[in-house]
Image (cartoon, rainbow, N blue to C red):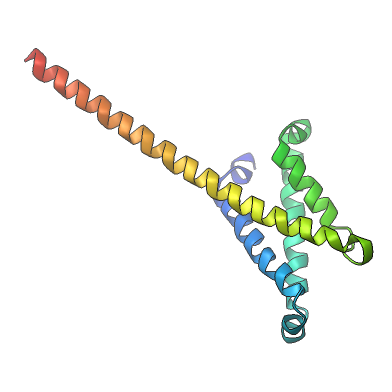
Length: 142
């Protein structure tokens, strides 16, 4: 299960859900869109919330006490917990927090992807440099 939760595919899937959820949250603020789409944006929002809840639940189960040592896990936990609070009346401001979380998650995921690609590139360059040094050393010895 840990291999699944920590996999690139799982992270990408959650990122897609985050992006779709950002769109649905935006649509919910547009009366014409809500009138046209009917209950679809609300249903997608509820589905996304359940997916986020399952993600948090899996991580809590897998990492147990270590879960709360990671600041991002704590942040995600709080955002998902807040998302279950009704967003009417004085709690409507919490919707903004959810949208901010969605954009932060997208940015962080993009940065992690760029970091991974950069690390791969540096490793490849180091291997090439190492091979070139060995080839040069063999030529000098010959």
